Length: 250
Image 1 (spheres, rainbow, N blue to C red):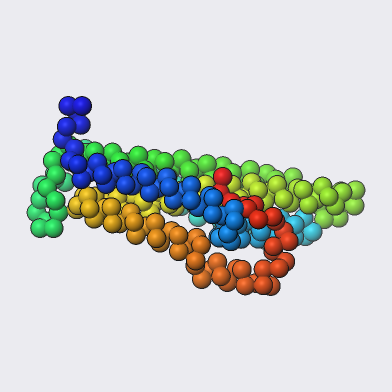
Image 2 (image 1 turned 30 degrees about the vertical axis):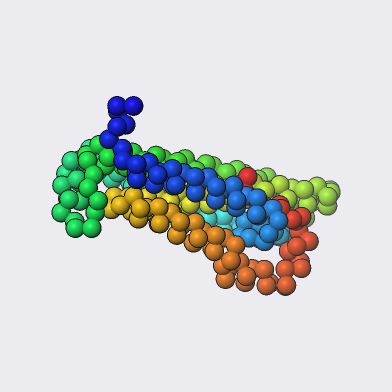
């Protein structure tokens, strides 16, 4: 306990608030996606539709290009995360100098070098988690590439239509899981940015985390992009592609 004796009560509250909000929102989003239209469930329907159309096309270069474009986005975040981690480790090694710099700012709460080191370690942990989720997302997109390459050709008459639909459904499911992993990585960035307010004041961090929760909810369940996707064909064609709850985060 002596090792952690330097931690202030406000900092303990801020850290617990961050972890509890992050965990609670993740659980909430998973449950709500099973009963309510959201980005995850609607995109699942589009992915099933994409894979079914993919199996009917003779020329599949465009599909490969689309998948490669998505992979580049994930790869960008994975690479950026490594750069951020390098910067945070450097800042951790120079925590005493960071403390002197923060003391010059009139609006920051006083913090010891040990407190700053703890905050940097928390941020480093968040970005390590983000890196692992992004790289796992990349691997899953790689699995999808293999499935696309192994997909039956459109002119294969001996392929059972039921087997084709099953192939499309489960390929879309792997694509879903890759998308969910990418989404988890993005959430890590949101909460990491909110955690940076901790260097100013623990109360500001708690407020920032709350704002992040609101922003995430609006974007995933109330965004104009979601409304637009639901409005296509009044959603009738897409709703036939999947049962309620399919595509929800796992």
